[in-house]
Image (cartoon, rainbow, N blue to C red; front, side, top):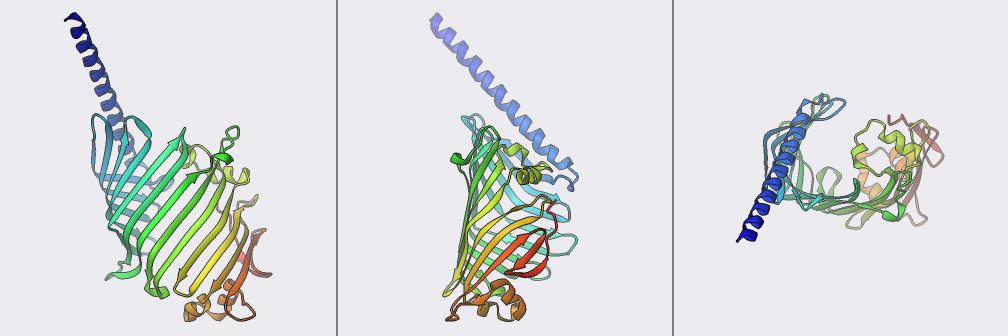
Length: 323
């Protein structure tokens, strides 16, 4: 009987400690989220939750931000609800469910947009503060320009975005990592560009990126990336709509003065005809290049060097520093 009593006391102590720890973490999370509302919206985005709920005791920490408003410079974004959930037994893995719509309003230009969707789920897994995987998957997206009545800009049946760690490129000594970026859109419709049933993929690597996500908001993040020789290596940005298609490959980084530097190769079929009056003739040739011998496809190379952009050997203009 005495052993049972001791065991009961131990269990009560463990439960009390677990409860105290959970409520401590929940309170800390509430303080951190509430503090985001005090940012100036200029140097740091200001995030305000119209309703903030924290639950999930005892096995999860569920944070729900209803009526979320994010202000950054002139852009104000609102989202109906974001619910993020973290398991107490795996704090490095977060799953978020986002309920639409989202609205975007630019105070400088006066433009207004609304993004609707049927379902949208995001998940993130870290390994010692390094991104292991971030995925965003959703269905039934529709972007409308809402200055006045709704005007459909584009819609897509399904969209995915994935960021994957490349462990073989991780340099622990220099605190540098690399990410594989992959995204896809299917069932794409864009009336303004006469896209009826398009699909696209984006496949690239980001090299020599800092390996600690806690530094990603720093003002010097791009400077560190440039100093480490970071690049975006574009394996392929591709799109097609029926017989029309395009593909872009190449690499882009930053030079010593933080200006874009690199090269992009563009091939296309039917895109010149598709653009038609939307782009002046001279610009179509500069951007998409010259036709093949049989006239079935076009190719062009865009170079960025010494603060200048070139289409082949034709200068297009200057490239300002990104910071």
